[in-house]
Image (cartoon, rainbow, N blue to C red; front, side, top):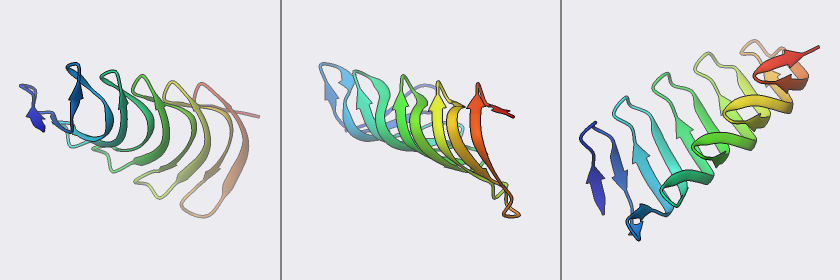
Length: 114
């Protein structure tokens, strides 16, 4: 089933009891896209999210936010592989800049902890 919403978002998949459920595709009107698991109408589980900026993140989502282990490839050429909480780098990870420089350590609310 394909459902286009009044705001321009588009959902491709099935509904269970009126809620998005299972492995599906959701395209946002702003050009972003999520391909992965929905649970009870919410982005939750393994998936890939691409953003209008060109950034791409693959990992575990909870309540629509990256939470747990993920890999993000940024338009700048930078990459982060590590833990997230509520969509922010949080926990251990490795940030690799486009020039090859790496920073490995701990992040707290998207900020590197020295």
